[in-house]
Image 1 (cartoon, rainbow over the protein chains, first blue to last red):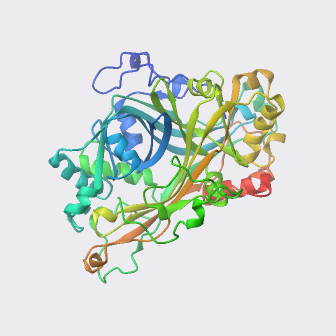
Image 2 (cartoon, rainbow over the protein chains, first blue to last red):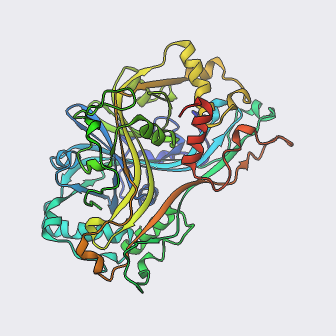
Image 3 (cartoon, chains in turn purple, orange):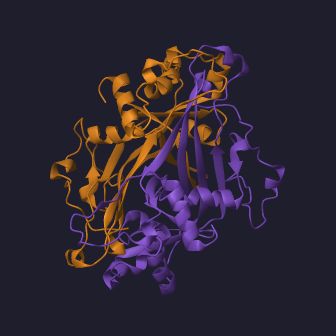
Amino acid sequence: MTDSPQTDSPQPDSALAGTSGDRYPITPRNRVRRKPDRGRFDKATVYDILDGAMVAHIAYVIDGQPYCTPTGLWREGDRLYWHGSSASRMIRAQAQGLPVCVTVTHLDAIVLARSGFHHSVNYRSVMAYGTTRRVDDPAEKTAALDGFIDRFFPGRSREIRQATAQEIKATTFIAMDIEEASGKIRSTHVSDDEADYTLPVWAARIPVTQVVGEAEPCPRQLPDIPVPPGMQIYRPGRRLDEVLQEAARMVYAEG
Amino acid sequence: MTDSPQTDSPQPDSALAGTSGDRYPITPRNRVRRKPDRGRFDKATVYDILDGAMVAHIAYVIDGQPYCTPTGLWREGDRLYWHGSSASRMIRAQAQGLPVCVTVTHLDAIVLARSGFHHSVNYRSVMAYGTTRRVDDPAEKTAALDGFIDRFFPGRSREIRQATAQEIKATTFIAMDIEEASGKIRSTHVSDDEADYTLPVWAARIPVTQVVGEAEPCPRQLPDIPVPPGMQIYRPGRRLDEVLQEAARMVYAEG
């Protein structure tokens, strides 16, 4: 599933300037070495990929051992937040300040070419780099408690039971300012060697989507409780990435 | 989205013995510290989660910097394989032998509880630990070339144009024998504090599935080429994880 560079949207030379406010700088850490034509460094694209995900994978190191932990994630501007139990190994380590790589990946299609070499997948991914810190400021922590709920379920923090002091103590929020990030996108069709198009091989692109199903009410749900307005975006059959991007736009006005 | 331990399937004490052939040993590295009731160490469950994925996230370290790279992955017994361009930074580093953590995550549902603390997601995940090596043995590399295609698309390696010497040279396969792994599953419904069930809050579980769409033939497809038999499992609307698990069973006879 290696394949040759695509020509769908070449990485512009201007990306190499990279330090303006709407683009990430390109450094040895985030440079897209393989298939650089797939690289994206404009923040609008990076934000869109991040905002389409509810779960990221976070790489971090404890005692020389790398770990890759799936974690719920949200973004506010150039800052990423996640949280966990104050007692968790990951959270305790990251509270001290660790270099991490936060990755979000959307699988969009399987691409079946006429040679093994050109088999591929379509995807949108972001690798974001930064250093973790624990959210200690009480105001920032209070905002994060509600922010994590409302960012995915607009308005919901006002509808639920408020957090207790014990719950707040048991929960640690981690923040990471994005120092560098790179997006990577493959969105084209089958791309074979020219000579191979004449081969009698079935070649196709198979779309893959992550979709939302019908909500299943809690079996102990009280009667006559309507679906809250903020949850209307979770219509059955919708793509989850689009729902989450819409929720982010609702909450932050500007994506 | 932290929530209290569930009781759906407690981790048995016998898991602590852990060195028999059908279970992974439990060590400080793979022990499930948070919500240990969600931990799974039997190989059948770990294999099933791994086999349902086409893309894993791999954590590795270069010069002290952790990276988390999404990568196509497949499993043969207790061995994981992935590949990439021989020139890629990740592949060149892993060819030397690196400790890595390979993680697969399936998001199955969003769980909306009556308090923020008990909001959660249902998921199946595996974190697998081992040390990478480059596949140098020519027979193993040849097998991997076809194995990577056939494992996802049964029989397809015989239908496509065979790899050229140049393509083989340009591609490096990485193997990792699983030293330890842990699965983690949440599959229950809303789980609120007992007192909260009387609150007039809408609480529900929203299923999330990754599904296969209708195949889009290559625009340069020759006429009258039928869909190969091995591709019949990719029926539109099917869950991708189930298709991939079925493909693995077809290819390896025993999952």
